[in-house]
Image (cartoon, rainbow, N blue to C red; front, side):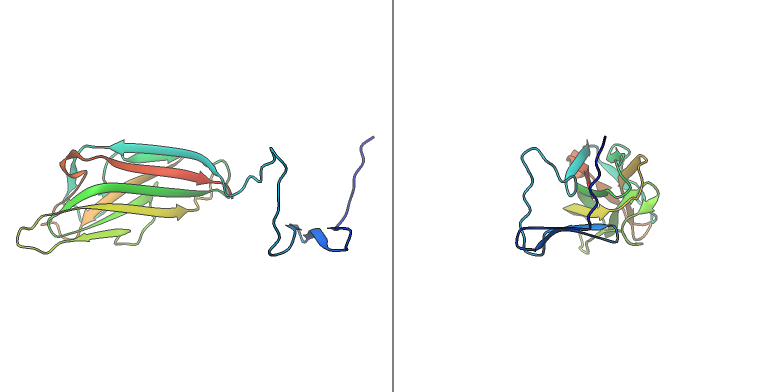
Length: 181
């Protein structure tokens, strides 16, 4: 025969609440307490559950004033294990621009930045050519357990301009980390 113990509160010998349930929320300890887990026990939240990464070292360019796919190979797909998981994305590349360019990360068809992206590269010089490196990161909440693709996109401010990534065939990377909630 199975036994069931039903309680709302568990107290220590001094009468202090150490475990309390209220409206579906379980509170263990109080602010400032240290909670120790037994050896081999896991909490299951705030941990990196999976990591996917991709690189590309082919120079690519655009003169589009709308965000375009920077590289089909500078893309990662990840399938979150829970709808409450968060995805942390990092992307870095070298860039070149004749005047002004914008870079962002898309989740599938959704721009995770603003209408001007996440990073701007602006250069105003008589030479008309600027080389630099960019790094972007964002913590996303996709709220899905379906495969989700993250990818670098970029655009220029004016069609008379040009921007590139992986300048001189340098290596770019994109990495997605699933973080358990």
